[in-house]
Amino acid sequence: MNFWDNIAGFYDLAEAVNGKVYSQMLSTTARLVPKGARVLDCAAGTGALSFAAAKKAKSVLCTDLSKNMLKTAKIKAKAMNVKNVSFDVRNIFDIKDPNDTYDIVIAGNVLHLLENPEVAVKEMYRVLKPNGKLLLPTFATKDKGKTLLKLYRLLGYKPQSEYSPDEFKTMLKNCGHGRLRTKLIDGLVPCCYAVIVKE
Image (cartoon, rainbow, N blue to C red; front, side, top):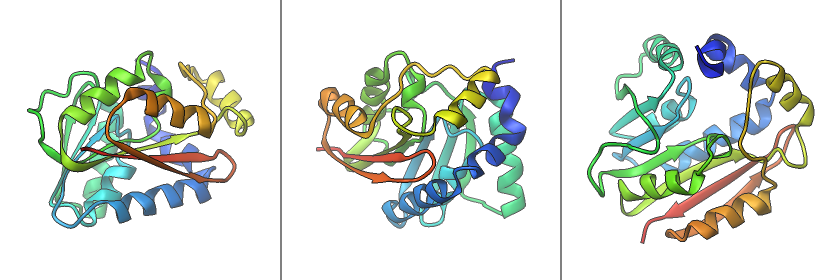
């Protein structure tokens, strides 16, 4: 059992420590999803961004490699009476869907965990429809949030990268896909909210 399976039961509580940033990340996601959209959420964890997207989306596919995370997400969906979210175990590097499938693809707080985030961005961009949006909110831990990171590391958390907002933006620019814009949500652990529009 890996780190993410182990913390699935209290992941939402850990996220709540950074509540102001987390709340703005969810509200930004809800605002960016157009009414009637078909949405894919990659590495969705316990589904917070999926449920934010579901407020206006026609359908949301909530995916993760951790079965325990998805189990928790399913319990939350039932408790919230959310009917337009489905769940599947999937790999962000091999999504399985045809090109141009989704209006919105989300990958929240995962790119810093990946050895080759550029490959994941390319795969997510592939399944996005033209003019669709890739939503990539990512905690910018390079300059702030060290205390929380230390606690996570004690539990087995092993990020591949730590980004400042500028470094995260540069990494995404270097991917060479679509039109990129970012905004910083400041707080205990800041979030660099990146949006890539497919051309």
